[in-house]
Length: 429
Image (cartoon, rainbow, N blue to C red; front, top):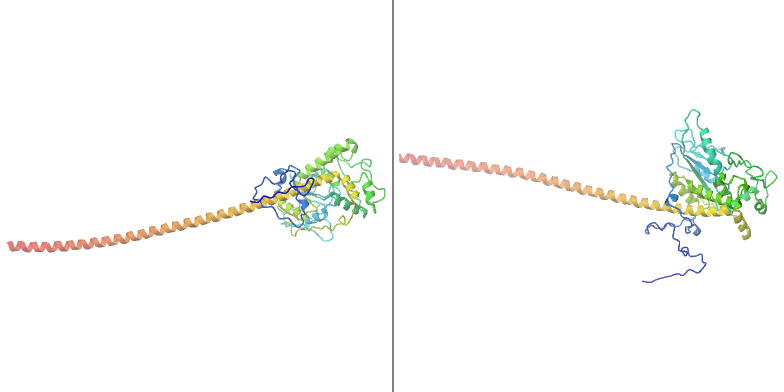
């Protein structure tokens, strides 16, 4: 035996398991083979666990009833690839009744089989029915009422299951992408930001610019606005804003507000039926299909040549963006690990299902073979019994024939003896 030991240098980041923490799936059998890395998966995607996710947290399978009353609600966060994913939902899923997408129209009609009722609540199916880029707070208070309004007046109100889904993106890339989008003239001024039944006041949410839009804004100006909603956008849009007094920053300390927002966003993300990551398109597709049992027609493609990817920023600027999005940075770290473990858990389940399928196949083959052997034994036993019966019949025939022959011989002998005795009697007389 040859022993080999590698001593990890102090402070080195090359030792993945140097701190004694276990791999997220060390509880599974050692014979589970590790999934070969996908082309769209870099080494940084496979990192060790910092969060104690349970099996219930990782297992995601929705018995989505397309023909019943279930509804998928897509929470579309700006600049996370939601437009592309939204189009996948209405144009790229194998459905018994595909969405009706007509040329020149932004919205598609996504009705259930046999019903004039939508199974999807999204930008490209129902439009911005709860406001432009409605967040978690708005959607959860608005979607049920909107769906009930779309029902026929004489129809009874159905109890629906709402399955919320969303996409997240690396905070720095998302922030730079939003800056470039605003720089080109985007404003999202029509967004409602409803919370506790009202929109924020101008004092609660001051505008970052006084003109019609913020066209041509520099990155420094973009970062300098304290009320810029691009800061920590993902955390804010996933959190329950009612917990922090909505947009009223004076309701509690900044530290307490940040703590509540982050914990609420993590909790809601964990409870969502599904979320994907922009940086991992193929895994996002795999996880969605595995969760809902719906399958896309064509595979997702990873597009890394975005406008944000073309922006080069220095280290100080990047650090500043990370500071402005410190909650999003923590949320994304949490989301990326949860996403990673869910994907690995799904692969583990697939391998278990494949092993179970093969085990069942071997059992059936064994039973079939045993049945064939039993049938063969039964046939051989029947043949043996038939032969025995035939042999018994032949023996009986032979015995009867022999008995008849012996009887005739006795008769002949008896007759001859009688004649002899008769002649002797005559002579004596």
